[in-house]
Image (cartoon, rainbow, N blue to C red):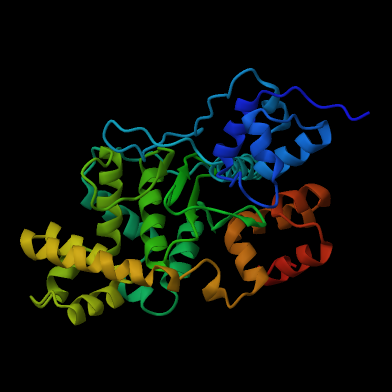
Length: 380
């Protein structure tokens, strides 16, 4: 005799909403009936449902839905309006980054490496121009440097060279079926004096990823963990987000350089020349022109709205992994971060970390993959 589980229909409905699953999907026709209370699942069916919805099985037996909160300061809130419940993809991504951070913190401590002096060296009241100058000085990320090749890859390498773990991904872990939503978040920072983490949503355009990288690095400089959506032109942006935006904008488009490079014409061709010079989006260039007084408000709004519309049409041209030519190893190393992967691999080769633990940390199950990553990172 088949035994059905007396799970509360509201818990099924909550799990469906939480996972953004379509209850009318032909793949799972019974989910809607469970949520409506017309049927009860068997235990095995409930296990299948929990896996599909990416929800802990035990949650489904609770009397009411739990309150899930982002485990770091959420700076996405606009004005007095709360941000919707975080998706399981966002929560799992943050938790995965935290586990990697925990490992790397112990790794640096065991090796006697010093704490990073720039973490928490300023606060959100510090002049953004001064903070940007300090970041540029430490990075060596000049306008000329970024024009020599892949500006984003160059910036990531320089940031990792400071001791910051950088992870750029558009999926949860190695699961290509669990994509991250750009309308939910663009990046986050996990501040730590030994193992700070910057995560960039890889679904975004490359120019936007570069801006997010510098935005989150500003949070690290301020010693603050933060979840961000990096909105440039919203009236309700959190004060700390506005500050981080200002720092990132000055790092990428230095005021003094812009004043020399701008020839007074804000037409499309001139804006494109500036975006090519600084490797940022046209929206960032327009904002910088307005902020520095080089573009009046009326013209700024007209150009900005037109560029937003054009940007939406081009949004799908730059997707996660395309610049890697579909190469698995390039993409995967970008997801977990070169610095993190190098640390795990070296520790494992030296006998400090078990291979099974290394495979879990690196998101692989194959020794051949481990070996190939080691060779690509030059630590084999």
